[in-house]
Length: 197
Image 1 (spheres, rainbow, N blue to C red):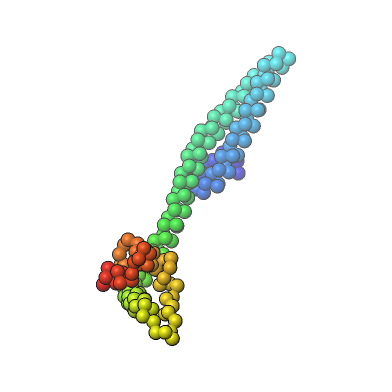
Image 2 (image 1 turned 90 degrees about the horizontal axis):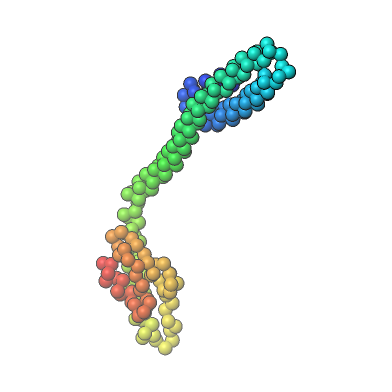
């Protein structure tokens, strides 16, 4: 297949891949450079005083033919570069659509799972945390009036110290949207229970 047929093939192709267009662009540029070199050689020989007159005229016609082919290739190159730009844009959009569709599908699955499971899970978690805070309060009260033969009731690490459950927990319908510090600076679990009925 000639370079001209390749150029026409890219221009006429529907949804030509950018890689194919790029390959033809490279070939056309190489061919144009080759023609330029040939024209320079023809001109040098045609202008040489030692070249036969008839030979010089033949070379002049050959130069004209070569320049025409180069102009034709240059025009084709512009069209192929346009196809290449369009192909790059189309392929980029296709990749973006794939990412979008994958993310949209995953979000739809999450939304479905949340709508079917989250309300019950939130109720269970609310109850669990409320019972936990009440247990902490009762333990703190009991630890203040310990019998002589008992050690202080230990509070689980999750319910005391610098844990996420005390520092900031956000659950729609239960916890407030701002972070709460339960035990810091003299805070008390009772405060949390009052704010989250």
